[in-house]
Length: 289
Length: 289
Image 1 (cartoon, rainbow over the protein chains, first blue to last red):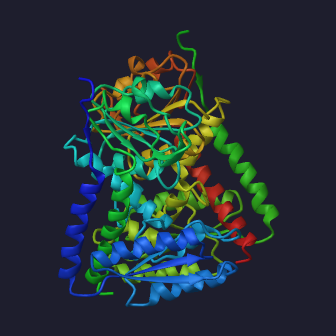
Image 2: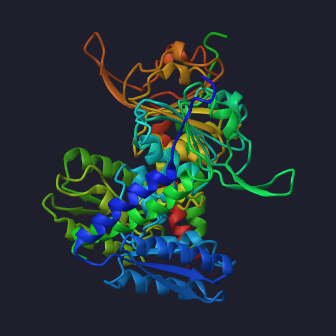
């Protein structure tokens, strides 16, 4: 039926998740304290950090921004991370990206304590996801799973197709879908016949960064479609608009459920960072650290 | 054409790989020293370790077996691993599995120094594979990639299907195939229509542990088939035989290339452990450790 898809309300889902986090933070009986490292602050970086601070305080999480100058050395940054790892008052650590040139983000993420790693970006945490012993998983990938689960669609045994094989989105999403026992196909720039795969997907996750990549012709009837792309485009009248990778208007006529952009994965990812921050604090408490 | 598949000779490929390792070990100018930890030795474990020792010595790698009693505590095992991490004369560390009950293998593997981790089993090393910054990858997965490359079949853009989603085989194989830019589908016990996928695979890797799982009807004409399964079966006359997961005789009539069992992935995995051990020593030398 044309226009039939249920639009998954990421903002509402995020709000309910935040309320749950707020309750559990209050119940924990010890402060939840997130230290965010920002190297070489830019106005955009500061604004983003400010919004994050507000989101944290809103659920009772203490937020501390540790600013380091743009010319910090890898060794100095590593020492700062080690200080935060060792500080018992710090329950979570995140590092704003991108880092200035010359600093190796993956190596620095590897220095973050596995349990305090609220973004789930330490390679060991990704490895634990592969091993099926997930401690903290990456926020975007967790958001995608939560959005799919909100539709009540069974993930186990479903034909899931992930388009885009980036380290921060596509690959972790594919791994979490495999952990949920979907049959997962990972497509990317080298895939020869993308439609062959997207057209058979019962669950379709698109994380490329290319507006209009997926149109109705690429989607199976009744699919659950999650759009991770966030693109700023300029319309014919010169105005700007934020869109995903999926041609929302045409695809929503064919899918059973679809996430909008904005208002889908975006707000959920913020909420998931808060939930991971709570989880780190809970794990530290369980480990009596 | 019936019976047309080229049988990939894993033993010959392993032999040539070992010769290359032997040359590079000799050229390194410092000892390559593998410490293997064996907890709670059994006759089978000792025999396996002995064969490994022979394989190492054969290419000029020093092999040292560190036996620990079956009742060792997690803390004692961790301390032993830390001693090996800190010992500059030890260039590689591996831990024989399974560990006795009560010891958490994944946690212990996480304690192994990332560079000395010659089996590539530290979750951080798996994570680095996901991140596309591979340091040391798991031996079985590397073997599969080498066996495919030996056929000259282009991996980039190929439709690759991995059957079996175990932590030690299927998942790392899928990740390495994705790193090589294949379009990868990961199938497993919850996959509803396995043939749908295996029949469209240009590269088919099977790692389940179920004899006869894949017959000719499940394979695409001209596919490259890599059989990771190793199963001991009893024949009608009561004799025993080692077979893979693929019905070799029927599938070889349809595939373009196929690995035999035994003589395919098995010998390559041993050779890959030696190559990883060399790689660890080379990386330590490059890091002046």
